[in-house]
Image (cartoon, rainbow, N blue to C red):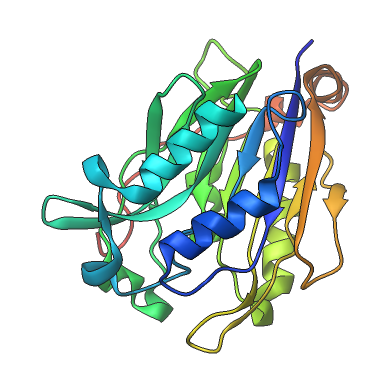
Length: 271
């Protein structure tokens, strides 16, 4: 059965300075390539930090230096590279997770739940589509930061013909240190309730608003147990292996999915 090597990139970010962040990340990644990993995961808004200056900092999708950079990294390294970017599309602005493949394909997910406590809902448009991608035999549900607090949006929604909609939940973030306990708890809870692996990548350091970020990037297995889990505030790059055969065996041994409730997603309150 398939195995997936995923590289978690936990780093500090230079405030609203895409060129500096591109260069910093290239130095961190070093010679990491397809011989070492299948997937490189960068934090939310890796080019700018969690900026609400969308009108000034968002890049047009078709001419985005950050999209061009992540595309080039995927081609050069021979693996998928993903992270989110502030993107302008016409008159709308999105916190957009970009999934760049080695053959030049770009897939994107627009963040659904916008963090109103920072005014994100006033500066960016809300996404309306869940997105599942496939890599090395794994189905991966994409999400961004605040999405993690909303279990209905992330809950397995299999069809009548399949038991599981996805095998991995991926969540990238700029999640501040004062709320690190919910971040860690929710990563593990999402793994347990969905019988899946969870990949959570967060930043470290301090942004221009004085917010501190502890990181706590984690690879969590399908039992909710951390496989990668560093001490907080550390910059690190670490690759972990996800094993589809082990996941399938556990799902068969502990078939809680057979008792799951079926439901239909409706628009959120106030949308």
